[in-house]
Amino acid sequence: MKEKTFITITRQYGSGGVSIAEGIAKVAGIKCYNRNIVAAAAESLDTFDDVQSVIEKSYDTPNDFVASLSALVGQGVPRQNQMYVQQARIIRELAECDESAVFVGRCADYILRDVPNHFSFFIYADDDCRRQRAKEIYKDFSFQDVLDVDKKRKSYYAYYTGRTWGDPQNYDLMINTTNITTEQAVKIILDYVELRQK
Image (cartoon, rainbow, N blue to C red; front, side):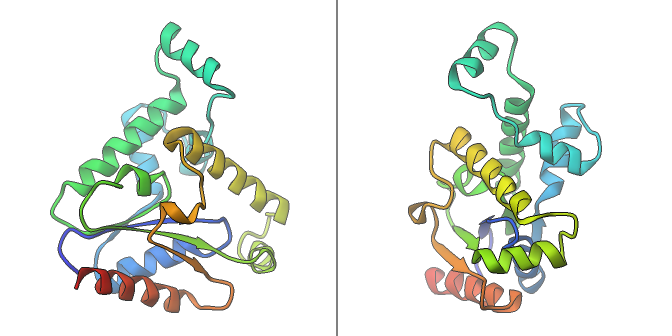
């Protein structure tokens, strides 16, 4: 993998995307940015609670464009918009460093879309697989909770990028993890990057 290569992972909840991102980072010997971006953005805005609480709040978007516009004009930038702007700034600054990195979520695929050596992947899985993962890993999560998280991600992505979350045209490759291991998915991604960089 070339120096200053950036891999972005967008994922359905329960598809194993975070584990894959961490696996890529470990095999390639690079950093993985996920919750730490949200935490850094919240800290810079003096809104830091616990990380999970901040992540949940960061997905909030105004209900409609008019409400958002009135907030921007009348009362300053809404907190959730400030969070997005700050996260985007942090992601761009990290991409300007000399180190390769993996980014999970946070619209990083869109934020880095014009950066050289950036490769974006969408990780998904069949509903039965995600339902099973919800039982085994996210023990207090029902499958409806899983779907609700995806709904928030889809709305957040559409609001800030103007694009459709999960649309194949937004990614270099989409990977169904239903019948493959985390290690196999990591290899597919790294092989793809290597092939593209030849």
